[in-house]
Image (cartoon, one colour):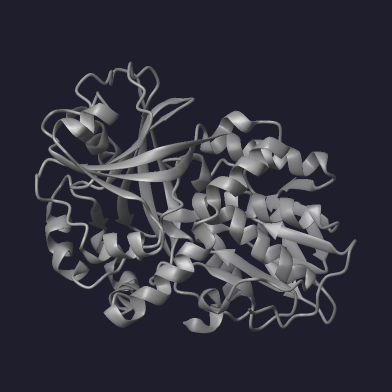
Length: 421
């Protein structure tokens, strides 16, 4: 058990949460439930940035870090494949190199079990927590339970004794190997060329990630929370509380939560905290009238994309592109997804696609930063969740709300501390 060393914020205290994505919105909602005066601040409306375009997977089984022993050997093949899951812009490589070295060090075998445990602690409760939140917000249809399928053309692709599968199984995931027609018994639209698979039971999905954030933000406002559309330009810690300079004027608070996704490291740097955060850009293509509706979330193992049936249509999300925060999108990444998913689902109607790019906040050890800033009292971090921000948001919010109010926590939060870097 571990708690924040900062003085707790009393009931009625003023808290500002920077970032109206899924993590920041959940944090603001939990803090408001505890009776604090909470303002949620973002330059764009809730759910309009990275949280808008994810694959909607509530991966209660997500415990495998991105860096594992043997990952380095796969990187050249990914990079040289124009349809591969990884791309690095050459101009960004010098700035990315230190992050990549940390990433490779994080994949040492001795570190993996503890990282997997820490990921499971924040991801495991996701479905139950979201069902509760969606019900409270009056939109239970936004969250449903389902299975997750990983499929491959290679009949020998999946070995459940491999490290990544052992990590999941040892932490409670129910895994069922599938061959041939067994895949199509579960999802009939998957092409016969896919000859092996694994079904993971007991996970969930949201039928519309962007609407989920908006619904939770509206619920937060109904409970008395304030929403302010503004860009925070400068943080100024004071002897008591802190002030924020924004493009809409000055704001003050007793406590601050930084949950600004890929932009969070810039804010942390203003209070003297250096966090190795990268913007890992992901793309999606959504087909508005797909003609098919898989009941499971389906991951193509070779090209590492996920297809999910949603309110807006069939969404295909994936790829990891490192190009920094400011570079223009490379829409070829989205179009590749559109071609590949047609091979997975031959009957898919691809006539009406929409494309999108978002920036995942990625840390080299796959774990987010959750907890107090080491340099400024009453500043708390909640960012760096990478691919699992949607999944981990409700538990992250409970941790942050407990820290801000000084309540004891029933889990070890040391793995998420900012000082680990």
